[in-house]
Length: 222
Image 1 (spheres, rainbow, N blue to C red):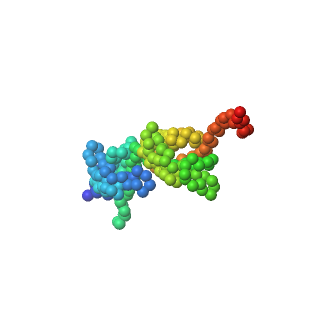
Image 2 (cartoon, rainbow, N blue to C red):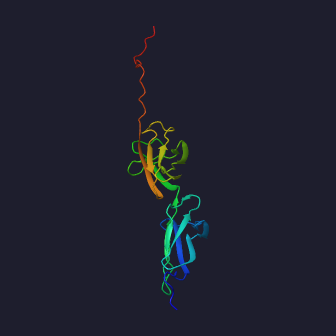
């Protein structure tokens, strides 16, 4: 018996997958997906949420993605189109992005003296001398110190698109030039590695003033 005009198509089950990442190959766990005001799934360690809903062919489903603490939730909802799949077809996959609210900056610091040796460290073949025990400061706080090779690794957490300034503290070696050099790095939407390479020169010691010349003639005693 034919169906009447305007009859709704029959409802059926539709499977789909939501995959949440914070970057390439970085799944996010603990992401909650809402349909309306109801939570319908939470991502696991692989960032995957497997969902099933019922509806009619061609119907569109709107899902809200709520990211966990430390991540920014997307402002736009996911739009899921219900499409009938052939036998054996994989469930369609939808991507969601949870951007981290903080990014990691790793700065490799290298300090060298190219104009003298204020420490006992041996010079290399090129005459450069590593500068150990130089503190590295950020916002006035020590975040690292160069080792015996004049190298340090500094790890900082900062919001994206903010700048970070590091200072090489030379207060313990006032003859180094320049004094207290700085380097500024800009955080982006990705974790990054930077190099802070500083070459110093050693200011020579001031010459001591010579006193009056003493006479070397014999003294006559009467």
